[in-house]
Amino acid sequence: MPREVIELLAPAPGQTMLDATAGGGGHTRLLAERVGGTGRVLAVDRDPSAIERMREAADRPNVVPICASYDELDELAVIPPEGLDGVLLDLGLSTDQLRDDARGFSYQSHGRLDMRFDPTRGRPAWQLLAELSQEELANLIYAYGEERLSRRIARRIVEVRRRTPLRTADQLAEVVRSCVPRSRGHRIDPATRTFQALRIAVNQELDRLERLLRRLPQWLKPGGRVVVIAFHSLEDRLVKRAFTDRDVWERITKKPLRPSREEVAGNPKSRSARLRAAIRRPVAQQAG
Ligand SMILES: C[S@@+](CC[C@H](N)C(=O)[O-])C[C@H]1O[C@@H](n2cnc3c(N)ncnc32)[C@H](O)[C@@H]1O
Image 1 (spheres, rainbow, N blue to C red):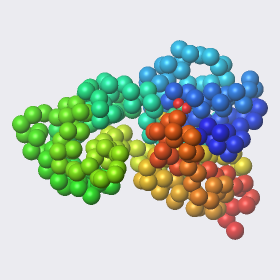
Image 2: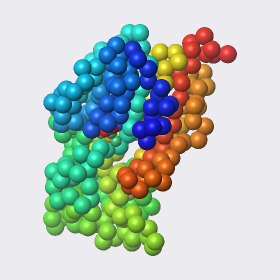
Image 3: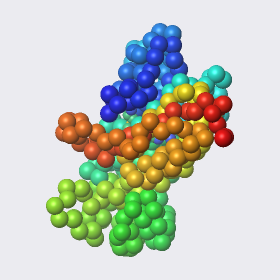
Image 4: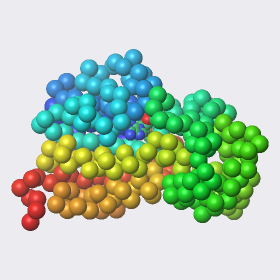
């Protein structure tokens, strides 16, 4: 939703913007064009290969690539003391990650079921599948996948892993499909919710998002803007809740914006996107 992002963030020459999920750099480039030579875009991603590609491209001197998780930026002291003019969060995973067979994000991939945005930290998904108890797996799939059949799936995973270690994405997808019926008239693969749950758990996505949402009011200048694009209801709920604090935020999208039919036709992955935006209220208007 690049047009909506630019309209709502309204980047202007000389401003400092944070693209907290820079990925393939599409939004970063749009922001960099608008802030110009006197402005800056801090382009953050947890994925070292995304940042590496951005460094290699080095096509914009006003882009500062930073490899970090967006909730850990205080530790790196990269937020300027005068504050940011705008922050963009385009959550979820990038097309590069989805297409990379070796990372196991797609249920069609034959590669290792890794699913870490940052492959140098934390436990990969195959390890969670091997180590968690049946009950832990069921709770995880229910909480992060909103999957009604979580207990059945967890039972099947434990049955299968006794015989064969579950290591690849297509193996897991087969296990889920073997016990979850494909809903009639639905094109969504039955494994989708289980994959989402594992990815969220592996990357601690909801905890990190909550932490970032708590930090944003301190990072933004009064009048600074934030745009968040969420891809499932768990993320979107956290964003919606954060923006209800009227002492801090003026919401500029009353309802979340959805991508147009044309955008979904060109990029089916965007179909579940929900965009919310808010402005940091000036301090004088707060409390009262
Ligand atoms: C949907 S993609 C962003 C695409 C990007 N806006 C573009 O125009 O190409 C989401 C990106 O967020 C990154 N990401 C996910 N969680 C993150 C976190 N906690 N901190 C920083 N980046 C994160 C992923 O590695 C992925 O590259």
